[in-house]
Amino acid sequence: MNFCKSLFLSVSFMLLGSAALATVPDNPPAPADDKKSLPEFTASQAEVLMVLDKSGSMYSLTEDTIGGFNSMIQKYRDLKLPVKVTTVLFNNRTQVLHNREPIENIKELTKKDYVAEGTTALLDAMGESLTNIDKIPELKNNKDIQVIVVIITDGMENASKEYKKDSIKKMVSDHQEKDGWKFVFLGANIDAVAEAGALGIDTKNAVKYRNSSSGVRSNYEAVVDFTMEAMASDEALGSAAGSWKKKVEKDDDDNSK
Image (cartoon, rainbow, N blue to C red; front, side):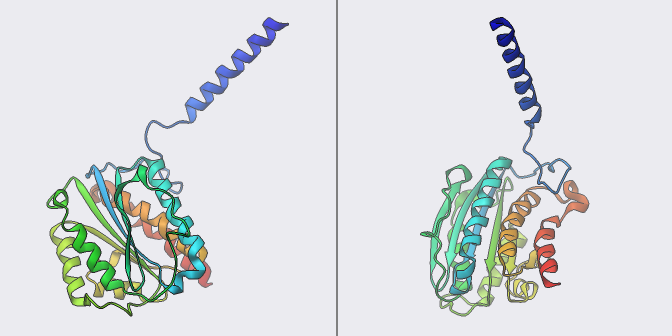
């Protein structure tokens, strides 16, 4: 009986092991809504600058912002994307939370890190952030590193003192057109497309999101998809180009009915 029991356990473990191996993909998994394999990347790394609103109007969405950000970081890890992240939180002041941290080193965002209060100095936050990242030598004329700048805000600029819209527009346009940097603007309670255009951001990379729990979380899912698209060529993406918008737009459409 002992021999039979031992044989049964051995076979069971072998079968379980085989099943486990069969479910582990050789390559990073594609997003859940994309059954096709990931496109071939033309850049070997991504430098992601997150400029995140933490003004008082974001207070009721604190937990969703924290949860969405942490979920984004985990998805980067799950996909094994070679990403460095700089996180800049802003209200009427600017706070650098992460400075070019490799994705594996970033700790979870907490309520101690993200405290929503104050007014909205978006232009100052963008100006300071772009000036700082522009000083990094390895990012200059380096086609192997895709720089991605993400702005998430829920209201209009109302508190900047150091930078004007015209100077921000020039900074954005220069990096976008000359250096190939990719900008994405996610805005609530404003005309996101018009505001992005006024800042020099390619309007096809601007989306209005619903200022709700699901809307905020959809933003961070979209950022990961945007990163993957930005690292690939237009030829590799084909008709899938711009699909990162779908979750944000769908949430806004569903909740507006």
